[in-house]
Amino acid sequence: MKTASAVVAIILGPVLVLSGGAPAPADYSAYPCLSYTLACGKTATRKPQAKALEGALNGNAEKGKQLAQARDRGNCLACHVMKGGSQPGTRGPDLSHYGSAGRSDAETYTVVHDMRTRNPETLMPPFGTNEVLSDPDIRDIVAFLQASR
Ligand code: HEC
Image (cartoon, rainbow, N blue to C red):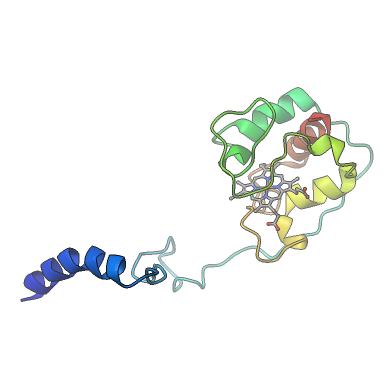
């Protein structure tokens, strides 16, 4: 019986969506989350850290470009258009002319370290707080962003 009603649901699902106007919002609650110890939605996350840039930036823009675009490091291209990058995603703003926006090194450093200090609901991963990128890595990436004009 269970199988039969599932088959009916599979057949009728698209028909109901097509005839009923806007589809119902996606419900992902049945999908497993990545924690074996905490309920979904209650996974432990590190608290936002507002880290200030200490001293002069001293970043290397060419290294920053490599780090930002490496899929196993910054992977910023998953969400941002960047200078010299291919196949970018578009969930974040286009950063290919970031250096023309007149943002300070200090502000840029703090948001790449942890964007949640600006927007607590952001999609952007807290690269510094989560130790995906080190202090020198972030300095190099800030230099790359500032050199993107
Ligand atoms: C999962 C998506 C995602 C990834 C990956 C991501 N970002 Fe973002 N980023 C965003 C979003 C969304 C915003 C817009 C800010 C917000 O969330 O309110 C943003 C904003 C920014 C801003 C501020 C732009 C401005 O004009 O103020 C900078 C700088 C930035 N990201 C840099 C980076 C860098 C560098 C990386 C890689 C190390 C990166 N982002 C990776 C989603 C992402």
